[in-house]
Image 1 (tube, rainbow, N blue to C red):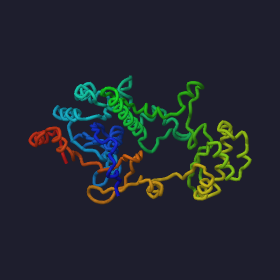
Image 2 (spheres, rainbow, N blue to C red; image 1 turned 60 degrees about the horizontal axis):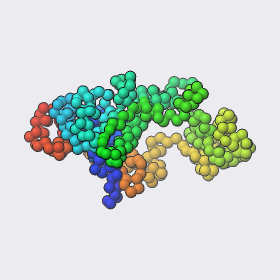
Image 3 (cartoon, rainbow, N blue to C red; image 1 turned 90 degrees about the vertical axis):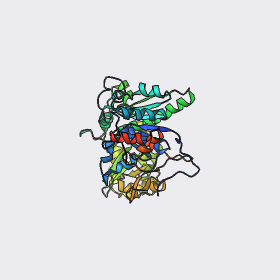
Image 4 (cartoon, rainbow, N blue to C red; image 1 turned 180 degrees about the vertical axis):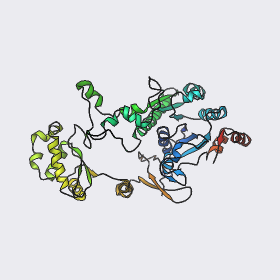
Length: 407
């Protein structure tokens, strides 16, 4: 059954109005987070096919399964943003909005008369989240930039993979998603500022490469003080020992993070290696780092001597953080995921069930949730235009001139 808040629980962003002008991942994911927690999100799409994400990856009756999650709780309004009449529709939407989310290349909205200067003049309290590859300023700002490029420029790709092989990518669009989360956080900060500091809005400028770079831990200070350029280290976490992936006797993979001093001791005793548990040099991470290869060899040989289930039994018994590497089949059947309602089942528009991820984070008093799945292109066009004061003949004229479209 689908998730829903308690009858007496208001969504935390109820009453917040968002206009989404983005496509694909970063902008729409940012707005999705807001929609999951009760914001009214009006997604403005091109009448000519809408958001390209509608047809990405696996399709169900012509619609992307990804779309049903990415656009959940949103209203779809199909408007031609290149037409003066379409631009006027957006201006009317902005007069009533709290937040605009967009991820066009900088300057695109300005060319349509919908940039920050134009929209903030209409609504001084507006918060505008602008997600782009390189940000709104700087020498690279006009370059096209997707998440993959941001991951490379932000330092993530250089660190990902094995040292004797080319850099690899994480298996999802992590650069876009990280930027989207920063965008949502920035929007909420800006709303809070508006609430307590005089009602003025502002721009939240998120560069995808900066969002990635912000997660790079000690990369910069280590380079600054020591000239150290960290390299790819495969499955291990450099400078933190032991934290690696090991293969078990049945050919499966086990992740172990035993880098805490007391956890390391417990693990070595569980292996029958009291000598290493009591070795004073290995009592701290600094000493273990100098003997990384030896420690990994001990753990690797132990893992190779037992099947995965036995390895987990021993490690869990010793209270050592460890786990198998899950594929999606493991995730869909896992009791922890199920107990936390992270696997939710919904009814597709044409019938049949679809499982989607639950909402994160979990707010105990005002939880987020999914009220409906990603809408049909232009499904809400007429209703939204009516709410803006357009009468039926005016909407019909806009349809005839291809300014808008509806489901």
